[in-house]
Image (tube, rainbow, N blue to C red):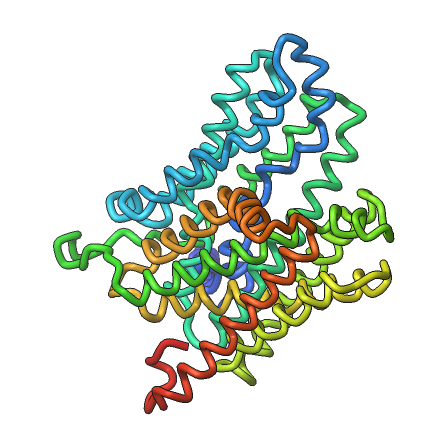
Length: 412
């Protein structure tokens, strides 16, 4: 009996140690858990390929309305991103993520069981609301648990995870499509698996001392400045997505299908860029932003001037790599300059910039084309590339002028 008691005590001690190890930010399982929530962020458009099948099942609904089911989540994402920091303040970061994953899981699979357009629309809006709850936390969480090179590496990995997730979702949906469009929505069930992993591994962050001891989340001029810069960069880079197919078709050296392949190559480059970002940051931390901006600008101009498909493919791969460095860098910097306890709100500001830029980019570039009386895709891409070059030059000149004494605390 004494021996059994001793064995039981040893087992309990071992289990306690395992729990502590798993809950440690240094453990690989902990890092997998916080990276995994980024998988769901790219899932909204995963079912875009089944629009024709969905439309056939909804004969009394217009084509535009069916397409709207795919983009509907972006509306509620933007709304709930704005309120996510406030919700996180009240119920805690972990609970906010769990609530968001629960909503995305439930709302995501609802279309499997109905042919009602309005029910599907409501479910898609709910899916976006769930995403909006933890969208900013998916970025700020790295600044909560990590700093320095380790944080930079994980932010790079996060970019790679989203790229891989996007590819995997499309592949899974392609395999499920022969079973009918209803079946494809099962992909959103992954939210429940990620919810379970996050719940088990990530410790509660509810404050031990009472909420009154915690500073309220706020933003400062630096956060606003970085958010505006990110907005501008997204406005410029979105043009590559908008014009890839029309560029090669107008140039007479490619088809629409090959235009889609260009975007896939850019995505592959971004995945690779995300994986190597940590190593790059360790070597040239202060040069990441101007270097990426300058190289991206040169490559976009090269894309506009290219007249052969193979060269366009090479440029697209390089463009994916260089552009992948900007996001992790800016999200890391905005967490550094944000007021205490405000990393989530700062990330929300960045994400609001992304969503607004993505929405208005087509209209902005249409206005530019009309203003200069030149509607060719190569013209707009050249303007975008030059703008990237100007951003890079301004950052370099700004640093030379100010001669910062403490690089790590200055705007980088």
